[in-house]
Image (cartoon, rainbow, N blue to C red; front, side, top):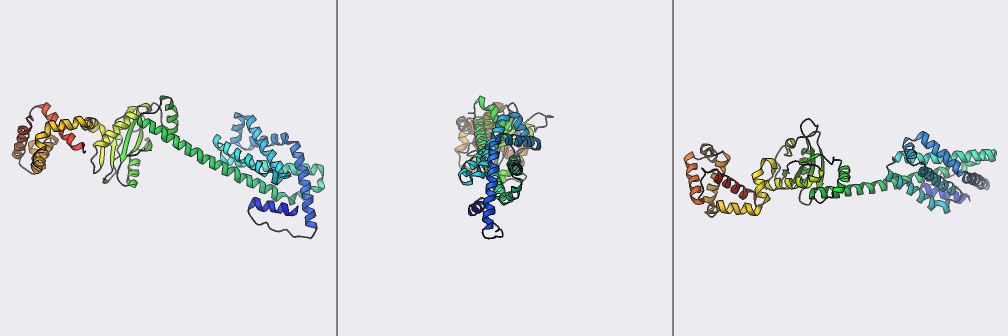
Length: 428
């Protein structure tokens, strides 16, 4: 019997026990007597288990605020949980080997269930230690009542009792942390699916309240979507951080071709960034880093439209990198939104110029583009192009002759501007 008790202590702690001084024949008798006293007291505890449970519940209500809330919500379930745990604990004192697996399963289930319910782990471990202390106290009380002279023998089994408590505290903590990790993964995956549905425009209206909770965004807020792609990953992360001014709130979603930020915005005085305050451009240009800022929409249900606006802005970004705010490039956005019509317009308006020799073609197109950028001023265009204003005017007259259009007619100027934009932004 002595060997069995000592072996159980080794299994539970994983440590080599410190040997007690031995007197041949005497130690064995002491251990046997100690087990007899322990078993007698444990059987009495089993017979009075409801009272033991009531005492533990009273201690939890008195000492652990988290359990006070649980008891207020579902007192019967909490009482039954404590009762099962105590029953398995006391049964393990009577039959350590036979009751071990059932006791471990019970503790594991409690740890997992309490993690799902959100009870703090510290409160759960405190409850298990309170239960262990109560069992030990009741063992001493029962022995003092039935045979006071045997109380001294309980010291020989104290290590086994507390090793059991430590083992189950470790077990319940492992179950809690594993379940908490699984719950976190499930929440992250669910949030990812809900965000993808919002951005794709495929989310269900019925899922909007859940999406608002999962993404920590108001269902009826005002939103802008920011699209970020290209550049070194570290700088993309920096661009993410720069996307939201102080006080802003954003949920980032990693897409296949770009990362999308759903940014909560508002009007002036609401404590949220105004849509015009969103500035995702890093302090120094990053080669290849492209950022598109869409136009604002109302409500999570319209985030799919906001994502399309951001994609359109991203499509206008130069290949070399840059930031485009859709509201500042609406003509280009119109072209990108209908690339087939944009290419048709470019061919119809600029076709005669596009079929010139490359050197001649680029000179005329650059002159026309620069003149439009300079608001029709030949003088300023010449300064930019390092040529005389008359040279600019001669090149423009040639453009008019080749295309059959007049830069004096506003409608023709609009067509020239859109055609040049289409040629610039439609890269393929």
